[in-house]
Length: 402
Image (cartoon, rainbow, N blue to C red; front, side, top):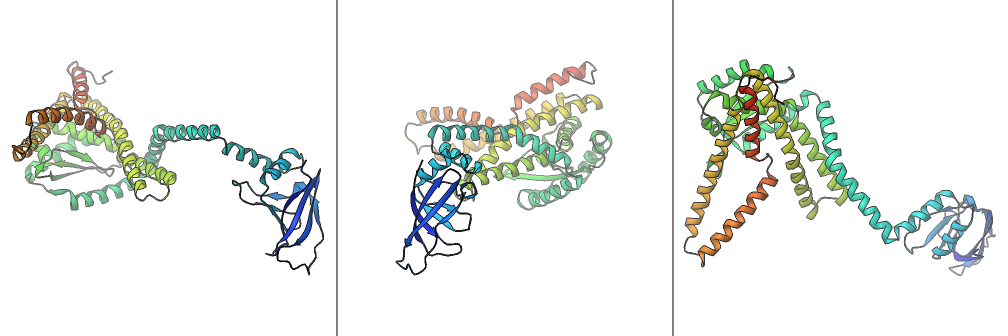
């Protein structure tokens, strides 16, 4: 048992300090006042006594000065942390909370405990991102009223019209034909009657190349680009893609994605603090990777929705595979032409051209693998095979494809 601990004593609500000795015996403590640190001993204080269990002891932080609040409100401080820990641990009358804090401090100072907690934290965060975020986002997205999707969708369309989309060149007659067929043929299979589907036609170009695309907003607005309509060879191909986009709206994928991005960003901010510099990069990268991973699942769900509706309506799912294949061929050809143009401009400027060409070919293969990993859509060939499987069911007259 520690007989005496040297330290300083401060009267209640005073900054005057006195040299003092703390003694703890069984259930009681005594603080013996020695002298004033300022040398002014004109004011004398009697020794302080009380119940040890009523003393409040602050947590240990390294070797910083320990503070003990006594029963009369005065303060005793000491740098002899080990002696205080010994008293807390050995005296059965010590405060239970103080004992628990002491055990926690011991774990915090052990490397094995620190590594164990680090592993537990990593596993928890990974589990929450992999399973917790999808479950939470799905629950929240399906609990939100349709008005929320309407607001987000309209704001998103306004933003895209300002920065990404251009007015369509498709004739009014062709637009009306697609819209009329959508209302009579597809809309009855669009799920909730509260969803207000609207088709929009826009031109979308990046780097001077017109892009074939179709995408849906949570409001029920579906955008078709000019190049997509141009590449489509029949009504079934357009309708197949429209059913796919309707699947995104029905399943509320956009709202789920919005919730996932928000949760992921919030987690990174909580872990890294104020997101500046590396924090901002981590936030953006983490959100992008998680979003792309989940959107593959969403695309597969939307594909299945479209295929099942096609069997009900009487559309051969092969049409979906055909337009996907044509869009991919167009994108591949366009990218190849851009690469050839860039290569022609650099021709003759690089030594050992054949060697570098082989190296670039190898790098292109690796880039294709990386682009497939980061792609927001599943591999196109896998989607085409899925369409072919449903097409076989269609040709057999089945309404459900197992």
